[in-house]
Length: 196
Image 1 (cartoon, rainbow, N blue to C red):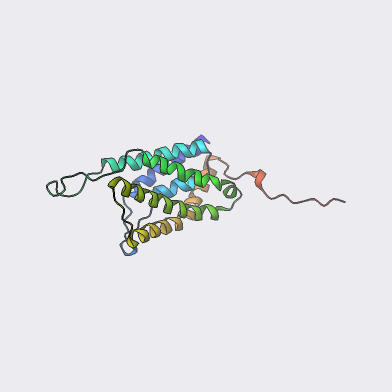
Image 2: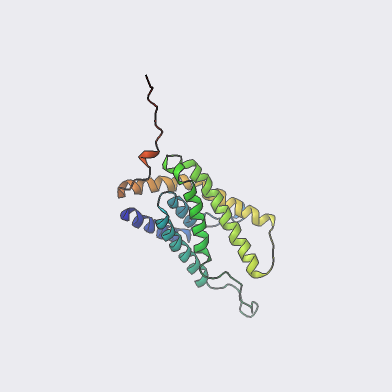
């Protein structure tokens, strides 16, 4: 369990680094592949709740640190007021909620039905981006939700969901090398023995 958890932490850190080099898909309304979110969601299906919360803290902390340390673009003479942003720590809460959503169908995943988790990862990414956008609108004191924004969120969710089988395959490989069992034997379908 410890080796698998350590490998998940390294995988999250690798995803954070790779996320910086993934460009936006301009023809698809500027949508992006949400690699860190995807790695977290897929990993949340394979671990217990305490490990999922540890990963949620790590992913949320790194996301908030990246946003807090990013320099604000633009000429300071033109943009005199700082851009309103969310408080540090909101991403940790969003990651935890998404993780519990993935934990809800964990029994299906442990039976080998990973397709449900792949579909739910797309839904969870959509909800994450939507809630984050609504929170930003709330902080700014106005509400603007255009068709372009909806399509950007939808395409980002779809692109991310399409990559989830690759991440699940990678997690199964890590689990095998770490001698961590993802599936429960007790959840296998039992055959009835005929009563004579």
